[in-house]
Image 1 (cartoon, rainbow, N blue to C red):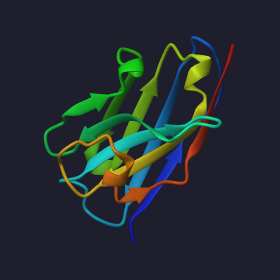
Image 2 (tube, one colour; image 1 turned 90 degrees about the horizontal axis):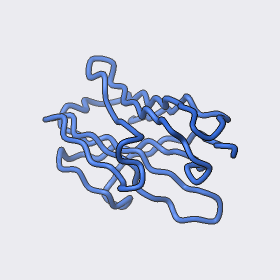
Image 3 (tube, rainbow, N blue to C red; image 1 turned 180 degrees about the vertical axis):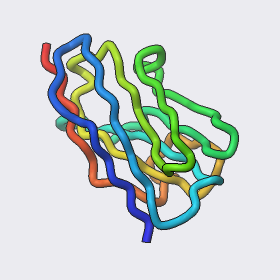
Length: 124
């Protein structure tokens, strides 16, 4: 059974940093895509970033480019989202997701497994 467990959320002031972690278990993820999504208050869940394990390709939401970095530790089956220069509009529940395909997609429907989410709150 595949499990994705996020950690690292919290409360931070605008301009601060946080690192989210997602530990994956239950299968081999070498040909998977790992993604981060977020859902702010009253908003739809949106794509934030993704990493293809097979070749290290990454893709980002335009509004987080240059501020967020997604990277992984393959032996540990863990993917991270390093978030810097955080803004109040980054406040959301952040979800880790996995897709059984090395091709990156930004649609939530393309992902097969989801974590429970971790809250990130950025105060102004």
